[in-house]
Length: 231
Image 1 (tube, rainbow, N blue to C red):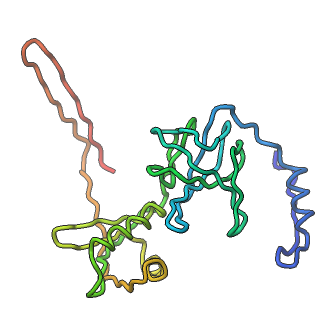
Image 2 (cartoon, rainbow, N blue to C red; image 1 turned 120 degrees about the vertical axis):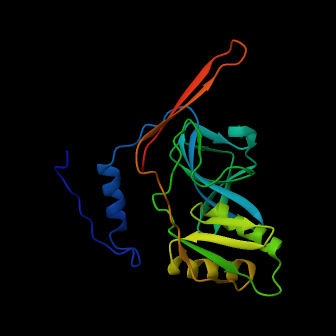
Image 3 (tube, rainbow, N blue to C red; image 1 turned 135 degrees about the horizontal axis):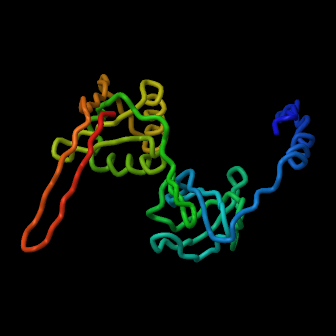
């Protein structure tokens, strides 16, 4: 009812007020009632020692090791991280966050089981940049490495022209470029650069228009009306 606004003071660094804050969370927040059917939301993809890790929150039911989920993807191992350390679990219930090995075609933003609504990023890039590779850097090797970053961060929009061996990225500006350059340097030991960016132009129609397609061969009949509107 917005009649009370709890305020807590403390310092996590000095471990002051932390217990009081957690006690207040327990006091004021109701426990969520989760459905019995399995559901999960994938929020991140990472790699550790070459292994692909899918991080998710379980939003319904239970996830069990060796279980088969969407698109016949099989869970190999379930882990729960605390910093850089983890414990292996045989199962994890709704409300928990876990990391999973074995899923090859699940990506950040995907929803599993009863969770049907996909996550769509609210920001879209407005600049295009061409990636400039060092002289001795192999184009195809770099493409495969960049695809790892692309699946870890769905907001990286990359285009590959294999004929001309050109890599183009759609980004939000210089800060994202600096972050990406450092990430590529740290992960793949390659110093890349970027060309001067150019604005991504988008076009739309001026007025509403309706197109009609008519089809009537050999006693079959179909007609489609397509309405297009300016955005």
